Image 1 (cartoon, rainbow, N blue to C red):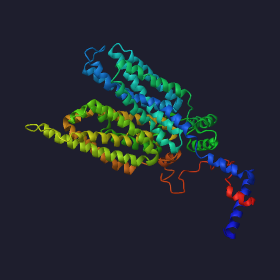
Image 2 (image 1 turned 135 degrees about the horizontal axis):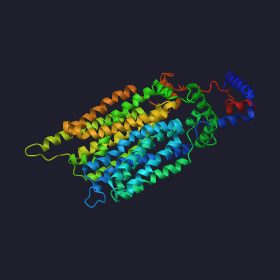
Image 3 (image 1 turned 120 degrees about the vertical axis):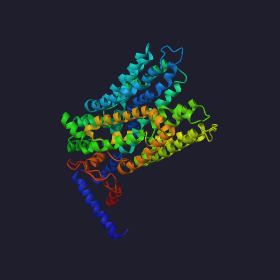
Image 4 (image 1 turned 60 degrees about the horizontal axis):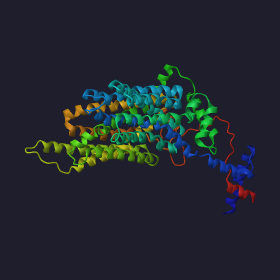
Length: 537
């Protein structure tokens, strides 16, 4: 080291000590300040993981609702069934849960902003428990109908609160991975119903399904409310306690509470809104832009054929001409979906939202077109004189599995995660409910229109259409979908409101505005331990 460099370092150290002395700190405790600073960067991950896990237990019921009808209808149609049903009644058993799901989505959005995320998650379990009990003890078809309506209502109510709660109690480096737990819960629920339904009666299956909402209700009672909601309700003391439980004792809780308070004051999120003001907030660019993006995202990914494969898997495997066991293929498909949902959660933390979306868009488009082309040739073979035996019957099965894998990596996870990320704090609950409502409406439309499309376009034409929609969607995703990986909720809100122009962060810089500018900075500056040692010598 040269004399000039040493002199410069000493002068810088003196300046640092002068500033530190003004705040009541000396060289003797500089290393302590340094140590405290390093502890304040991130909270304890296990506490955040536990809170996210508990809040997403209820999402398993959504998978239960999807998978239950697939196993209960064949049992009810048996000649010795305690409640025999015909085809018309079977269609009601399958569809009634979807009819009440959008209502639950809207209701949960209202309750989230009025009662809070925690209380809403507790309330959502009540119709689920009642619904499963009604089905388990049903003595006529109408009890099953009412039970399915209640289960659908609860399934619709749990979606948005689980994701919003997770996004608000976790830090950006964990948020994407943990918010995706909801998708894992749905896939797990479908697999559980498919598997258990092969061994037990539908009454026992409904009774076992009651266990999940009961556990979710009990565990959620012990979880804290989100600090974001408590700040909005002007309860900073409770927000501090909530963050302390979620981050641990070594984390600078006061600093994050100050940031949340300053952001709330800056954007008037802590002021109670009238219905007119709520409508204005929903129609503002910071809410309307992300809603438009996610609305189109859900529409395009649903019309890629994902739930057509889920609801008609056995029939599609049968129509493909494969020699494999259709039920076994369906169970394996459920296992693959669950496994790659877990992989997608990890990939969200590493890869971001946009890359996974492109993987889904391109993979789903190519696999659906490939399946459609094969089914076109099979149609020609079946109608030839004489009929030609199908060849390469492994190919359509491979297309279905490739479709499921690529779809799960992005489409089944990313938009649901972004529900908890993109919306402004003031209306995050209600507009999150609107988004999940639109998503389930698209599910209903796609599943209902598949038989109609197959009758006019044939199966091969329908799947080719799905593939083309998926590929066209990639253009929209490239132009409009923002990358939110590693961004704070305040950053994302500022981006859509126009306060910042981009979410791309240059190296060494942050696009997040300094929300502490108007606060009294009582924290000491960080003093380098190396400088302190040099000055002492």
